[in-house]
Length: 118
Image 1: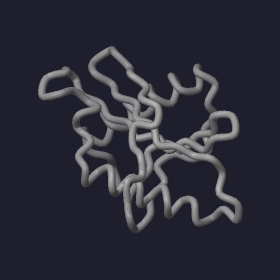
Image 2: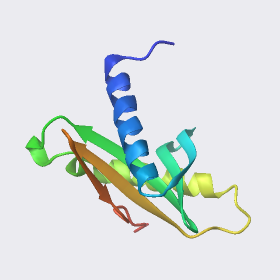
Image 3: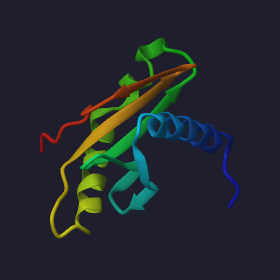
Image 4: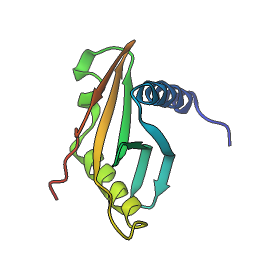
């Protein structure tokens, strides 16, 4: 099925985020993990840590920018998807949830941006 223009823009943002994170030394484990409870844009390895990455992109920083666009409901979906992903591990690795916020040409990597408060 062909992608919509919005999906193409999202894919390009994920490509930029992935290239940026690989330059920082992270290694890609999985991309666009989809399950019944949500989606994880990128799953990467940062040393011993498994990192779930939410990529948000906005063309301008108006209305709070990319990072501010992650609603509490979206955070809950990301947490549920990460927990679902972790079911495959007998021994849970150390992990965290980061956000890569892209506002125009600026990339901001927010480590531990989403914390489990459930």
